[in-house]
Length: 258
Image 1 (cartoon, one colour):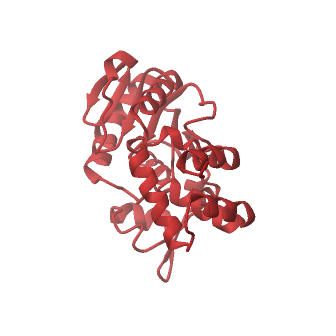
Image 2 (cartoon, rainbow, N blue to C red):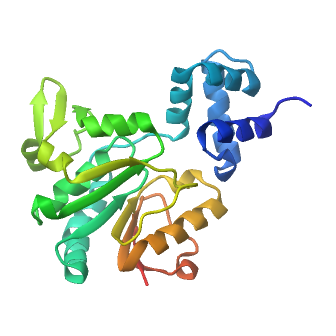
């Protein structure tokens, strides 16, 4: 029997713990075929065999697979809503010690954005953010906390000047903000979820998952949150079965655990 995409999915799962069956097949298969062609391989089998022998190619594949697209202060209107409405809501309901999970945090732009906004309202030692991603390479980058001028170009000037040190075209985030964040490896489609979170931020990630996988992730998010906790999703997303899962709407792209 010829080696096909089904065989490739099974072997990738054994090699990486990433279950490609939980991603939208047509979209993901097309992405992988494009990478295979770019790397000069003829088919799924030869590419898989090459990944087994070449750790750098495997890292490239995982990074490409997890679609690491992130930027500071992405979709400003949502962050303004977070600051003006969600932070007062969180403080009113949970006090001044807030546990936040930035799920699938990529290169760290998102959790650092959260920390900088929260720092305008809370002492830094009261800010606790857990930031996770499946890709160890981007986690290492996030922990380093050094970004290009392009990456930080969308940040309000007050946050950029207060929380970064500039060195030419590089911007290093200050240690006091870095200390607010605990970066960890986590697979949304496989690993155990944390508990007792007041807010989860997961934006523009589950759009790549199958409908069943989305529902499972959102259900687990619901279990992770305390009652009245907030789930903040991306501006291209919606929770189709929100009511059945147990979420109500607070505002556009902000859901509350009921």
